[in-house]
Image (cartoon, rainbow, N blue to C red; front, side):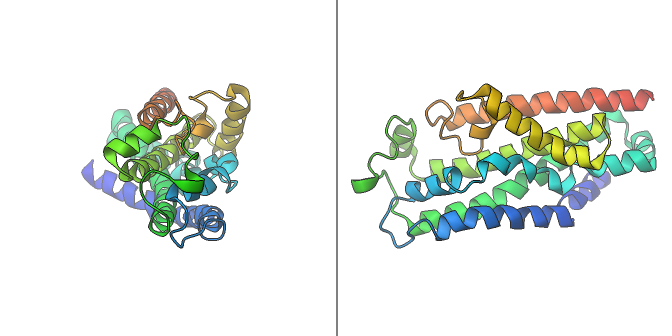
Length: 252
């Protein structure tokens, strides 16, 4: 099982979809970080974070990218008949554990790596600490004021990295869930985006709206732990749906 896990993890990361996804995410986020944000130490790094996460145009399309890495691999295995051999070798539970982890890791890293790069660029080029002067109203009404005062800037920077990973993991697993129930590559790649935007429109301005979970700034007035909690709830739901689908596949 360990060998299968390592092989599957390697396949989930070392593939064209993973690297193409990272390039596209960077292409969307980087202009907001280096062109729309002064990196000469004249503005708070939180101003730059606002540009990256709220003004870059990334949020409406964010669910498109995590599925590019490995979510659709199940479709090829199912349609080729290779899946039955894998399930016979690993068992239903073993396959579920391994594939859920590898899909989540690939999707999480696909989002977390570009987010980390961009956040570090903005942080290094910005003014650390609580915003002052013209930026003093950036965190008005946000719980991040208390968090930064108590834990420092790395609460925000590290929080963005963690939320980026969980967001990518969630939507990669959603793509995997669609692949399990409708083993068509195009469905598994497009359906998560449609679901994401549909939930965005219907849920509206509520903390558990998936579109808010990437930055966490609008979840409970800047409560990153609450955003993590919602991410984990959604991830658990996605894995449960995947589990039911794979169990059905085993019976067939």
